Length: 430
Ligand SMILES: [Zn+2]
View 1 (cartoon, rainbow, N blue to C red):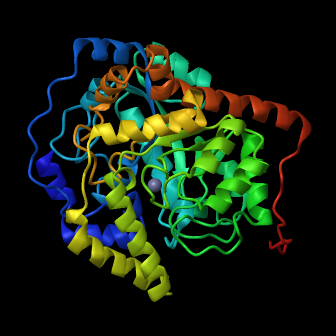
View 2: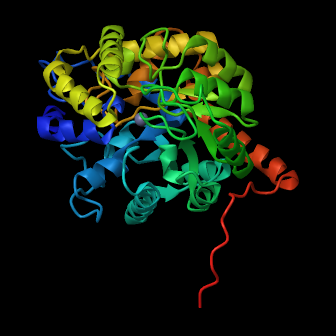
View 3: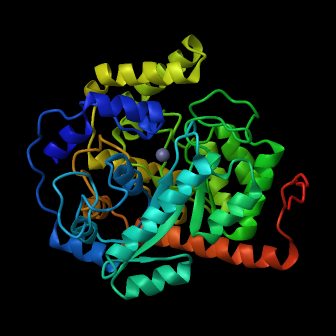
């Protein structure tokens, strides 16, 4: 793990990633402090309880990692073997009890070719799954997930991270659904033409009129609406407008850690009413209060000092290079503190896991990679969670939301036609 972090934490790479916009998810440089004493192994009982359930994780950035490592051709890393780099490979997914995974097809908000790049990333996920057919299989529904899990494989789903991907067109949204996307995070770190982001200046006080149409069309398709990365105003608008359960695919509790990337209590209450699921992120900067506070202060300060987005992004990168390593990692217990609070406010039926592995370079002690989920089960058992509740949090709640979104879509499709963009007539040509 240590080697891996060093590899991922080179300042040049970190600066580039920050510029590309993924940093607040948040790849950060030089973050590893001295190795703590090894944790005791997870107990047999916890392993047995964990194995009886399924981890259905909401967000893993392996596809973007492969692209940024120059391995879009899938030649460099043999994921069937335990790798000494990165946070994800098949042996570690197995060890972690991961049975279903939303693979993120991420797109930086300022990318010159958002839609095409997301298509390339979807293609990458499909090739990845085809490359390891005994371990992975594509899923596009809750029934698919159940069948694939029964067959002993890892159900692989696609989640788009960044609504910039649809280039303001509902036709592209439908096309992405047809290509397999089953959720879309409405924004990344930049406010779009139709939705405000959590760490950018608001333009619409939430969603614009077109933004509401995007949400309703996602409902009609059966694509989950993801409120991670959006502003509280956007969260409120989504939860008011959406007819299907909403997810926060990789966000934790604002009350525990005041990062703008986390979900505040009033939105957790609204999410409960909506039937949605908030899926806890493992990134130390969103989990450990001091780390979150310092990040928030810096982002706010830069927002007022530097109006230009690109310059602001560079300044944040510089700050992370200098200060990122001083932020506290926290431990797996901090993550369970978040889960405790999310359960208290949203209810045990509305909490899940969205690790953000391979999109983060700093995770709590005990949650270094995808093999580590059983430690959360052990800690929840220690805190008195019922086994059935642990299984819900680990994956069944996410599965329920996906199933419910599919049912809502069926109903809507019976009564509502597709919402069509206003396309200007083209000259007929030859
Ligand atoms: Zn993210």
